[in-house]
Image (cartoon, rainbow, N blue to C red; front, side, top):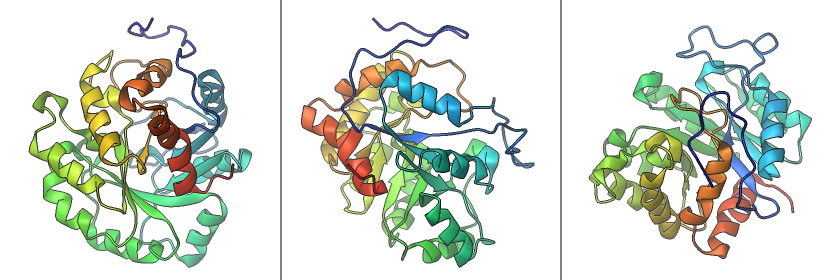
Amino acid sequence: MTTALHAGEKRRKPDFILPAGSCDAHCHVFGPGAVFPYAPDRRYTPDDAPREALAALHDRLGIDRAVIVQASCHGTDNRAMLDAIAWRPDRYRGVAIVDDTFDDRAYQALDDGGVRGVRFNFVRHLGGAPDMDAFNRVIDRIKGRGWHVVLHLDGADIVPLSDMIRSLPLPFVIDHMGRVDTALGTEQPAFQALLELVRRENCWIKVCGSERISRFPFDAAVPFARALVEASPERTLWGTDFPHPNLKEPVDEADLVDLVPRLAIRAEDRQRLLVDNPARLYGFVA
């Protein structure tokens, strides 16, 4: 039985058994800061969460693969993420943060290191939208590499950004169910716009972040995630968001795993969500 986790409590193993080859398609490594310093202009300073902590989490949960997403606290210094991938190259892939200083050689080094996409943050409390001229130049550089772009945005910005998103000339992934406001219901314009986007053939969506858009036991997130899985069963992804940066309440990731059967009701949808879809997008070999 799941119960709210309090700070300092020991995490448990989930009741739901994940299928073989399951992928945590959204997680982070932080530091250690003494080896991989945090960006001087960061908006927050996390506790260290190195590759060993991530591996221990996945061992506890029964997760075989992972996509390590570069977070803003490390900026464009992707070394901590690349180091983790190099540690387990068959099981890990990455999403980088880049800027205009990255040339073709730098992109090739990222590709060789297991990176398959770049992430742009539009979330207001993390600095807001990027310079769109730089954004477009990066898109031009990566669109021929077979990479994708990850968009981290607020629910309130889905409608205003929809025209730009629809015009993207490459696959794109939207983080955390678009961070929609669950209090406004599934009929709200932001979520309806998100559903329109996810039906596009080049759109992928992560049904992670239940703990960001709802409170334990995360019931409010379920109808949103379920609608997204039903709208695009072959392009949905799932992840833990470990170690949950900037989250006020502690989370036991086992609770997020046990939520999966409520998000994807049919076994075939869970297989796609957890195994087949991330394998196809990130090139994991069976």
